[in-house]
Length: 367
Image (tube, rainbow, N blue to C red; front, side, top):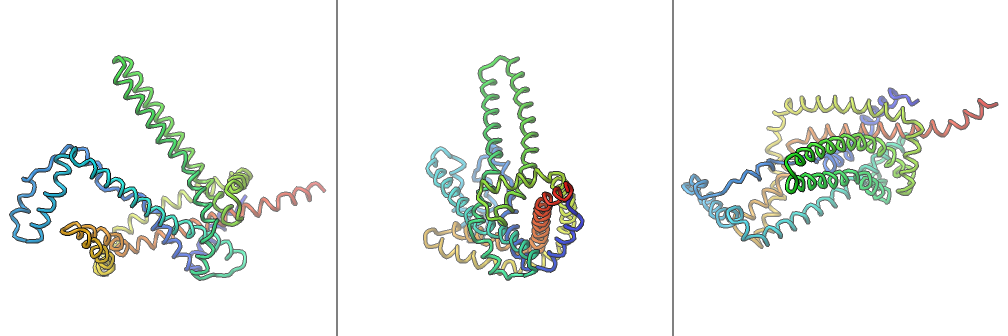
C-alpha cells in the first residue's frame, strides 16, 4: 500500500520548490482547460426574424461609425437571417472556414499541450531521481519528442467511448423519430419510454467507464512518458500496474477528487475576491490585446473594408485581453495542474517500486 500522505506532502514540496514547472502548468491550463467557452448558443432556435425596426436607434444615431456599422450589418448580415435559402453557398464557406479554424487551433494547442504534459511528468521524475532542476528550455526538450505524440494517440483512443456515445444516442434519436412517424400511439409511447430508459442506462454506464479510463490514463501516459514504451505497451504496462495495485490507485483517485472539489470551491470564492484585481488589470490587458488586434485589422483591411476588419481585429484581441485580466486564476489553475500531475507521477513511481520489490519479498518469505 502506498503512503498517500507522504505523496501529497512531497508533491506540495515540488510545487513550491520547482517553480519552472509553473510555466508548463499554465500552458496546460491554457491549452487543455478551456473546454467550456460556450456562449448563448441556445438562442439560435428561437425563430427570431430581423427587421429594420430593430435598428431604429442605430439609424437615428449621429455617430458616423455607428451609422456605417448599421448599414454594413443590414446589407451583409441581416439578409443571412431574413432569407437564408439564398445564401447556402455562403453558409457552406462559413462552415468550411470555421472547421479550418478549429483544425488549426487544435493542432497548435496539441503541439503545446502534449509536450508540456510530457515535460512536466519527466521533470518531476528526474527531480525525484537525481534532485536536479532543469530550466524551461531543457524541460521543453524533455517533452518535445515521440513520447508526446504517443500520449496524444493514447488520449485519442481513450476518447473513443465518447464518440461511441454520440453514435448510440444518435441511433436512439433515429429510433424515436421512426417510432413517432410510423407507429401507433401506444407503440409510440412504449418506444419512447424504452428508448429514453436505455439512453439513461447507457449514459450511466458511460460515466462509470470514463471515470475508470480517466484513472487508467494516469498510468498509460506515464508509462509512455517515463518508460518510453510504445502505445500498445503503454496500455499493457499501465493496466498491469493498476491491476496489481488497484486499491491504492482508487484511494488516491478519491483523495484527488476531494482535493479537486475543494480547489473548485476555493477557486469560486477567490474569483469574486479578485474582482478589484481584474479591474486593475483591464488597462494592461487592453494594451497587450491591442497588438494582435491591430495586426489582424491591418491584414484584414487589405481584403475587406468596413466594420468586418474591426470585428476580426477585436476577436483577435479578446483572447489575450481575457488572459491578462484573468491571469491570477490562470496561475492558480497552473499550480493545481502541477500539483495534480506531480501526485500521479509520484504515485506511479511508488507503485512501480512496490511492484519491483514484491518478488524479492516473496523469495525471502519462502526461505
